[in-house]
Image 1 (tube, rainbow, N blue to C red):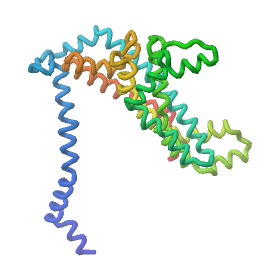
Image 2: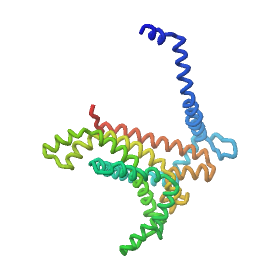
Image 3: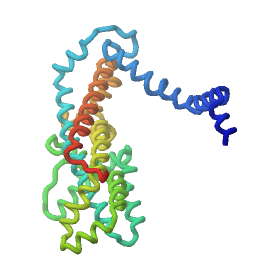
Image 4: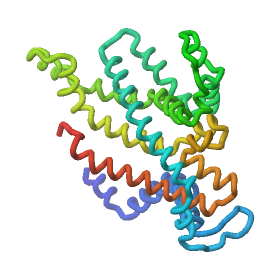
Length: 303
């Protein structure tokens, strides 16, 4: 034992251990600098410039910020994105929790149902599914054909400004698999003795959920809420494919990321696009901070 202590406190051995640790950390450190920190710092610099990818960047200070204040399409994109987040995230989490509670009742074939219901989360962000969704909700799509079967005249769901955004919200809600799996894992950690004791006292299903299930999974709900809000603010593929990359009709599906992409790679206004990217980072950070602050009032931990 004394020899082991001597080895641990030997300066040469310690230096050798440090070198080994840094050697193993080198790939991560290179990735952090080259892939994350470097581009972020470059983007921060470009947000204060006028840069079109073809000519050297020209420093213009806070002029991009001034442009944002008067940019009506930017304001529309913020409105569309906030509506998408406000509707899509609660509906998705509510459906995911409801199905997780149902699967947690001990039904046969749980592994099969869990895999099938998780599948939309793997496919929902793909281009192929977005194209399929656009076809389903088109004027001659499957949805209108089903409505016609019941004598209801359909509309162009993705071509009507009144409904286009809600069709994309529906696609987001459909990809409930990932939060459902997390909810299910949390539900299976609740001791059955809690339910048994409450049932002895005459508690029904609603009281069991309200007084036992919900309080004990509030940390899981909070975790899913933060992740899904961040993900929803960054939604891009669905809106790009469904709207044909235009954000139409009438900018009703002009997501913030879609507008950012159009400015950066459509108009080559990369300086302004970089400023938009940093604004999105600030917005997501603000929502995350508010969630962490509000969590102290409704998230309950056992210890």
